[in-house]
Image (cartoon, rainbow, N blue to C red; front, side, top):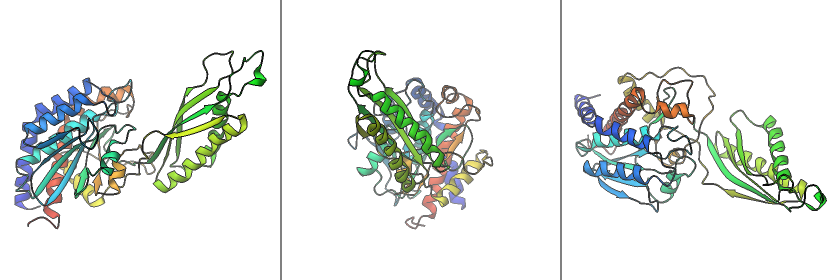
Length: 383
């Protein structure tokens, strides 16, 4: 690191710490006002307002998505994108900590803004709606939001610190069976039982799990299976998610799962439909060089990366799709809250408080420092 790099990083950190009250207020406000995917009207407006105030050129409601944000500043040759998520989960609110992601992203962008041209950077914050199943980043990627970026980054809270989240590929779909109603006591032979079709499919999936790979996951819920106990159910439906470690393995596994649903239809005589419930998420492929820079910067802030066992089960993120196109990182900020983990009410509680607040500021600084490193070492930088 050169002396100029050291000075640049110190200035970036000072600016972020100057915004600390604003950033923590934003995190707490988003946490207290959870909004579901594609409905994050308040959160996206709050983010847009903060960046307008920081001198960014802001578009709110872009790429055909009313709650997407694009905020850009600078004219340097190295273009870095910072992603901010802000959608919540049904019933359990910010149990994945997207309030921390949003505030840290805004903090990194504001920290870089004042000296952006001197750093050789152009900085774009992308506010990306509906990560929790809606695939907001995938839609924005398809519509050009990530075009021209040399790198994309974000941070995400978790129970423990991780440089690289094991991000899986995911397909998600809805299954619906249609049969024929009949009086269950007097004329059962006249009915075609849609609930039985769903049950047969679930039994087949249970058997299939014996022959799946360690990285594979099949999960689902039944959302409809009849309304009266004395009527043969003529409809049944459910929502399902299939996960694997690569897009190629996912395609193979999804085809096998769908055959289980076809078996339910065949055995009962029902008709069946399978409808995608959002775009497929690709596996996350972090850029190793960018990730090493981030980890060194996070450790310089005192963050500790514990040794974790190999083969950890992963979650899915639409940042995975971005990582197949743009050099990307998606590190995890530990909140030291184990056994509470993501998507639990207890984790939502952990996403406000001292550890969460520190994660916002540390995440913002570590990302901003990584952008400084990346710009300095990029071939386009005017050294």
